[in-house]
Image (cartoon, rainbow, N blue to C red):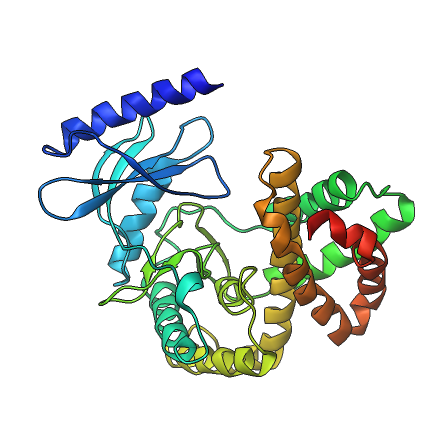
Length: 338
């Protein structure tokens, strides 16, 4: 396995030396993520650059380039694409810095940082024409596939729970409710991973936005709940409610929501979060079981806590909440991903 990786890195380095004169192709690992992409820093005459390695077999660099242009058109900060080889999956991007929201968020700066993130979100939702953005729909089939990641990889593969007829019926009832709630919402451009690890603190045009290549057209609450009920950082619900209200005010001003949407908005937000968090738990389990990336297991308890809270709020999910606590809650289960 090492040889092909080294060969690809050599090809990437040679390509960077061609498109960035003066860089000598020197690559310094910057970060990885939950995908197969890799990122490096390099420097040339002038500013530093980020080099992306996005293997074509698993990653869609063309989508990244296209969505970057859409987001620029909405007047938000994204990396400039200096050069790209779509066929090989190589790109050189402007460097938005080394300070993701996750690393700098604190009680005394959270209101300011979330205000900026919410303002950028409403600009995106208002500024990108979903009839002309050529992004796929977040439809019933995709919502259901994502929920299967939870049952297959978390319940089945990580915890070893047998999905008998009773469990399958319970999961189907939850799926029907979550999908129906998602599909009845107003449709907007959805980043799909709008959270503290993908938002960079920038001195101007804050925040810088990353990891947007999987964008879709989908429910208006999706990116909002991704941001405010983040799998990687949790805030008191009173604070989340205040930020959600701030978003609502601006969304109404921009006509993203109508007056008739408001009575259902909190439920939409809660159930969209539950769908996302179940998917995320499944992805974290898959990263461990399939890819050998165990670092995300520590985020499962926090993410499940969001699910427990929603199950406790809506009686229709009481049985599912009890099932989850009986399976994922006991100490011997939690030790799997602590």
